[in-house]
Image (cartoon, rainbow, N blue to C red; front, top):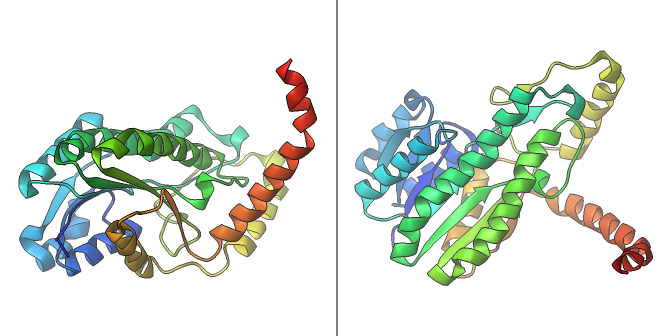
Length: 274
């Protein structure tokens, strides 16, 4: 198998770290970004020249372009671009401040967009490449308390589906990775939270209990790496792929309900046609 060159944002922990390690351990090269490069000192020590650490805040568009350019100059090509950097913001819609809402979109949506735009000229020119956008089951379904997170991932889903049609002519592939609940720190140290409103105190408790039941046993981020390697090695990778056992059931229930509602209200839709 030909060795690949990866560009992965957010390699300090969670999915990004596990996927970077898995790629390196099989002989691939990785340019990995982190806001604090001390978190990847062990990767540098273990893998030397095949790992390029890049200090990056993905919300900085100019820095994104510079980081991608440096990775390409170092390795001479880019085969897999993974937009993994992101976080979860917890807050009911009424509780969100403007700064909180904008920050969530700047990281989860615009950060991925800027890195994608930075990488595309190189992928087009070489006539190949694979962009992996880390979305979520929360990119196709939605639950209380994480509305602005859903907004960022639903937007990423839409822009990535359009992208996949635009770049297919250049041999570039796009896959949306949609994990369920995993044992990362997505809801821990990496997350941010709005100030709760007293009017929703009881509802907050109900939502947390529902979330515990829905998520069940968290998945193992390390095990997810093998699944991602199979996706990037596939001749015809999927546009969307779940990670974990829970997402398929959530998606089926959601889409069955949507279809039933659309069918029920189709006479109204047809009346609106004129």
